[in-house]
Image (cartoon, rainbow, N blue to C red; front, side, top):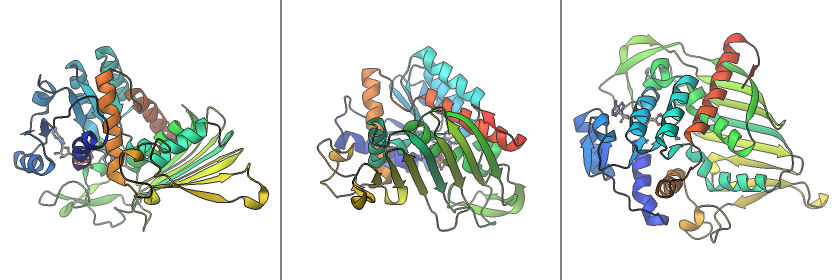
Length: 373
Ligand SMILES: NC(=O)c1ccc[n+]([C@@H]2O[C@H](COP(=O)([O-])OP(=O)(O)OC[C@H]3O[C@@H](n4cnc5c(N)ncnc54)[C@H](O)[C@@H]3O)[C@@H](O)[C@H]2O)c1
């Protein structure tokens, strides 16, 4: 994420009317050599291995937290105490109690705060939100979402931090279910109750050989084995407060699916369908059209002039955008909110509400019963 966010900080001022200049002051990491290389490559002025010094620097106004999940709370709470605006990666914290502390800290310090659920700012998703708010779908019946990847199907893939509960909190659940829960809350409304199922297909993996490339896909397996302490897949059904039904699946075991986020929403007047791997499009079924002309229509969400959100700041119609742009949109909105001192969604409060759903699904899976949010 350091790479995705750095790119967005660099690009946002070039494409969006920001109310302040952005200076990429300091990038922080653990390894002096690694962070210095990242500084040069990603365009930062300074490099540091001391996040406390960065958080307390009087020259810095914004802290952008891209570390593994177990350190979000400590850094965010310190940043709030230092009066900084905070952008924090998802999931906000490790559990509800920790997220609550983070919310309390930003409220007490009255600092602008945002969770990086960047998928909210895919133009097609933001456009779906507008259509739903305008009543285009009528009453919502179903929110059906699947976030599927396949990067750990190989049992030889090592035990990176994402597979260790103490660092990540949970597996596919907190990593990618968190995104589709957030989109459900954004597009449909608050969850009321859930029933969940979590599963770990591969229970032991080789420990990571530190000679490997990073903690992600480039990680290398060592010889010793260790226990996988998180879920590989998470499934849940649920009910929203407005009566709509939720059907969610997050998995890292769907061969062929790389970053497959598919969302279908069905309402009394029509349906919407979105697939991240074709992210410039939104499919719309309009039941108010004459029966002989009905069918899913294909909206290419690239129309400038305010017709479609965000895309007018990029290229002419039909000149499509990609993953990195979602971070640029997020950061552009965040910077302007910081200047105005205004709230910008999704806030830490949204991160807490998201965590309440995540935790309820875990509790449900553990006790084999429905859980109210
Ligand atoms: N929004 C998204 O779509 C999205 C996608 C991927 C990851 N994420 C989130 O971003 C966060 C980071 O994930 P990642 O895949 O980039 O992880 P990563 O392991 O690739 O990178 C984490 C970085 O944090 C640094 N770090 C760890 N502890 C530190 C410390 N004490 N001080 C300074 N630096 C420290 C590491 O050196 C490393 O550079 C996670 O919370 C993850 O859930 C979000």
